[in-house]
Length: 470
Image 1 (tube, rainbow, N blue to C red):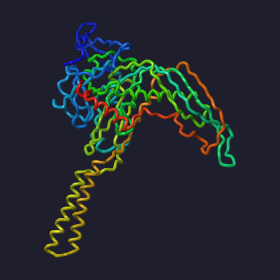
Image 2 (cartoon, helix red, strand yellow):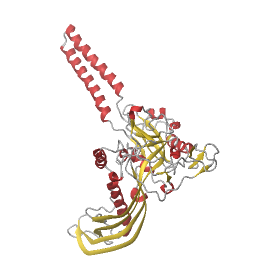
Image 3 (cartoon, rainbow, N blue to C red):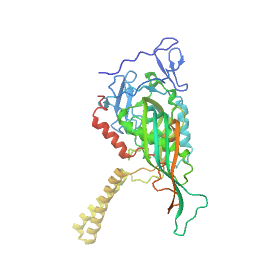
Image 4 (cartoon, rainbow, N blue to C red):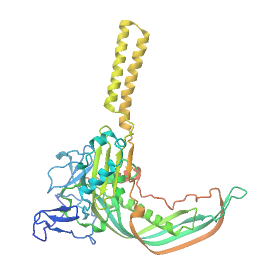
């Protein structure tokens, strides 16, 4: 049973036909009948981000090969392929999709442009720079268009930070006790903060940001998108493209958003504390939300992926479907690894020689041959075991093109009613000339660690509903 209302059928305003598709070069809907192009409805006033509901119009598949969850428009597609590892889905991998997004941001960069950027980046390096298997299988024609799910948050908040700042005067030198003379002050800042389009992944599998071999680390590094140009949800915009599944609700990532807004406030305050050459130690950070507006959106990405046969690691190059910015994780040629099948054969051959030598000892009666046989047998077992262990624990070395989205600097914002107050001016003596103890005025806490991601995923699992649409 579907919980969503059936959308009104979209038709061409010129000829009335309903056979519509996305023209990626124009970022507009095009009628396949009369070739007329037109824009979707801009979504400035859309109220959204409802909790996940079961839906019939979009169907999701959970990839048994790499774990990705891919969404298809059931009205347009009868088969599905994973955009990461190219696995072909079967019906028993079908899962409930989740909510239809509020907004969709159309592709503006064409597939040809994206392929050109990807090919140029790979071909710019010498042939032996990247892994030989990767280069042998490199085929830019396998680039696919994918929509990734995001939350978009507009928020107004009242911010109040207080702590201590320290600075040294010009010409300060050590005294007779090897201490530096430092001036310390209490620091208070208070203001209203208006956040516009803070963008956060709404797939729990893409939240983690600390690994080079991590999807979110790359997908988010091509942010920001011009989400102000997003339009109200229209399935015609995703026709012919793959989509990833949203599996989180607002409550699941609200804490993450609060961390990132606090980061943004902290970083923006740095321009008001330049006096403190040794930095500031914020001891109290209060961010009180006044108004929040959440929306969900599909944002466009061109994706080229490669799965390493032995380790099953997936490497990828991605292009922002609006700006053309490129990022990726690519296997380098100097990767050191065991090749498991080959290593097993070598280990097996050594073991077989050991068994043969031990068997020959019965006929020859040579103690030395017995020792040699036992050593060969043990060595063969060690080689095969090492192959297995290495395959399971191997960490791939790779070149990372782009690291992370700087939510604290790239998010649009406005500060109003700034109040500055400095108190408790006093002189102290310190050992370290350059930095206040506990300095945190440039700290970033909104980039999620593994433990934070596990907390979000555990919360989702404990609710027991987000994967089945209840």
